[in-house]
Image 1 (cartoon, rainbow, N blue to C red):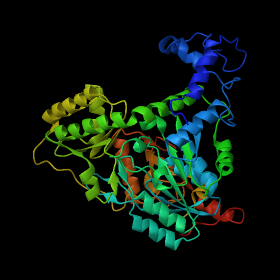
Image 2: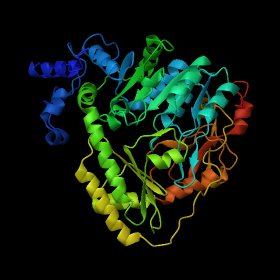
Image 3: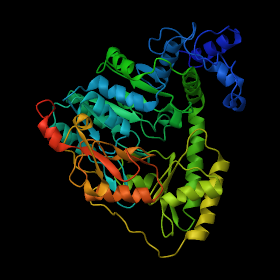
Image 4: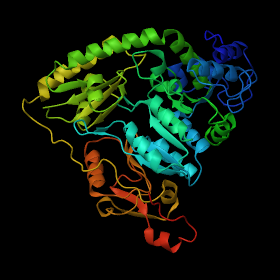
Length: 497
């Protein structure tokens, strides 16, 4: 195919130039209604916000320019098929799990997965077989599980339908995807990938391998995170005969909206075009800027920019060096405070913070002046908060994740009881509680509250981090187990791994 084509974008431009008399939705009718947002972003944005008129195809049953654009996307990513997503990669993850794993069937996946995976378990009714990730006790972050741990779970659960891999983790750690796909396929299991932070991997040889190039069956890719598309614009990729077109299509029909944004679809078409022709050159530049920034940051007292060598030493197979991981040491502030200071006092917006680390995402939109602003800000902050020989308490928790005793869907649907967080020890959670970003749950439906988790939640609340939970008053939703037992003839029994 001719990758220089942008079929959907061209069709959208043509439609706008035709000066249509619109009587379809949306009701602003191509910008003919006035409001403050239109005044700010301009009339053209609203003109492009059309629904599904003739000539622009239909995302839920593409046969025209969307179909052409998806085929170009598939070829660009070395996949057999691509499905555009306008509900974010979360929708792709939910669709891929729903398409491959049914209720009571097992899926092998890392516990440091995104909240969308847990939601997919609730929707599908699948049984999670968690592989525990390697835990970095220095930075207090989760990396990848080992290949051997995956293989051990595959051998212990030979009837599992699929394995699920994060490529890369939020902080850039990757796994041996080729070996994982090979081990899964020879056992008759599918290989699925969450590539929310890996849209750029296919376009620069110095970066880790992408899932499609490792013969994975399905991969959900956030084009908006690192590929240049608008927020919520992602793609679900399929390769091989392990999963059919119909399986994916059927699942997406449950997840997708019937009113997709053509702004997002056009951004997917154009982002693919840019990456295909400019991705290698631009990412080479980004990697160089990132490496230079690490050297400069490592000369600032109180900060260590961790890169490939560090993560390989921590057990990662490979590392995505577009992630700029900055460790704090000997400062009188923690990572959450640094995150806020950078934005409030220096107008530098980081991606996320943890207790001892902040993360910057470098991507095709990164500019040298932005990295200069970050480095200069850290240098100034060091002068204010660095105290030589000061140390942080390290590795505060016995275990980063609690024990699961009930399938997520069973817990989600079980009778609810609201209790104080301090009284939740030994009770089964009905909710997912997480810090966002990154959206990796501290506890999920079906797991048991322990003191570690309670202490972590309380500590995060004190840091002013965004803690997503059912209530804001340190009460939590747990399974009312007495009612559950009374109705056990009508509900499914506890999960036993």
